[in-house]
Amino acid sequence: MYTNVWLVQVGDKAPGDYPSGGPVEAVHDMWRAGAPNIDFLAPDIHGISFPETATRYTRLGNPLFTPEERADPAGVADAFYAYGHFRALGHSVIGIDSVQRLLGRGFMGAPGDVPPPPADLETLPLAVAYKTLGQLAPYILEHQANGTIDGALLTKQNRMSRSSSGITR
Picture 1 (tube, helix red, strand yellow):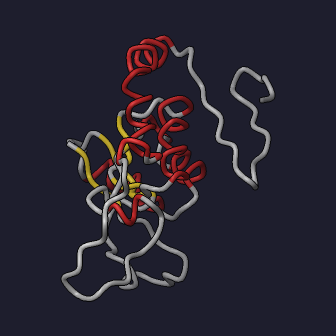
Picture 2 (tube, helix red, strand yellow):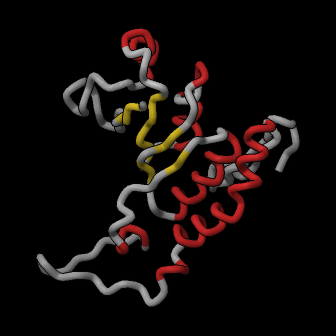
Picture 3 (cartoon, helix red, strand yellow):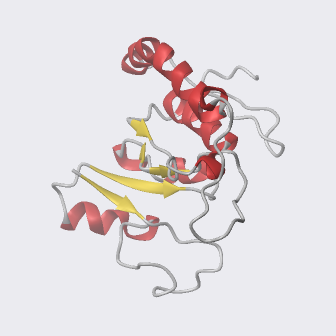
């Protein structure tokens, strides 16, 4: 059993600006005490800094499961980092039903218009990533169980990463 967490967004100043009462970071301990049968707290991390949020949601033995993440290339990269560095249980994107969102652009047509699909859905970053993760799954699971896996997330802001083994990548 898990609970989905709608995270406080930039610009949310007080409860009421977002659905307050959920297991946001400030009240993890209260949720653990008051709802002991919930196995883990699962944050929606779309548009929010993935590494920092994932770190906050893996404290005190809470396993990482991301029920909502961006479907763009950055969200795809987060999936690999989640499985390697945080030993995630799962990582799911939101908006998978919208090809235009997957392509990273909006569709500005008349109401009821349907955007044309891309020529080859199998070449979208999400499709390629899921296929790759599927191929790597046996190795990921083996090394997660043995504690012999880690991941790096390289971005414009984070050009170097240090793994738990101390190796600079």
